[in-house]
Structure formats: C-alpha cells, structure tokens
Length: 124
Image (cartoon, rainbow, N blue to C red):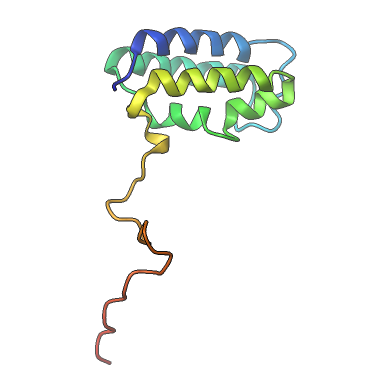
C-alpha cells in the first residue's frame, strides 16, 4: 500500500490548524514557536505534494514523543493528536520511513537474543 497523497495533505492541513492555535505551548518540543512549526510543516507538505512520498522528517514529527505530540500534550489536545497520528499512519501506508529499519541486517537475530558471532580478531 502506497501513500494516499490527498488524505495526507488534508491531514497536514488539519495538523497545521492545531499547531497554529494561539494557546499552544511549544516549550517541550523542538519547535522554537508556532511560526517555526508552521514553516517546517508547510515545507514538508510541499514535498509530499511534489514527490508523492513521506519525507523522513515528517515521520519524525508524528513519532511518539515527537515534536507535534509534545505540543499536543503540553497544550491540552493529546487525545486529538492520537487520532491525527493514526490517520497519518494510514495515509502514509508502508512509505512511512520512521517505522522502517535503516540497516540491512539487524545487529541481533530476530530469532535469538544472542549476538551474532564475531569475526576473528586480526593477528597482532
């Protein structure tokens, strides 16, 4: 399943409205203030429209304890954020890079908690 660009752009418009509320508290987020949050979100929305994909930075904004959730929790709309985040996940489909492992092989086997065998040490 790919990105539902129309749904994602609509959602980002709603998130923008939440972030633009005058009573928001940005002190626990990485956003300096509302203007900074809106500029960043607008830029990422432009990328979604132009490229039809989810930029990694956008996934970070929606991640648990990410900047948008921090604003939401500090500003009294934490429950609404959970609904918005679920809609983000649905619209992003499998393209959401925040949930995709970045390495080809994890350091530990998914089957075993044991670390993989080490390569022999080079001779001294």
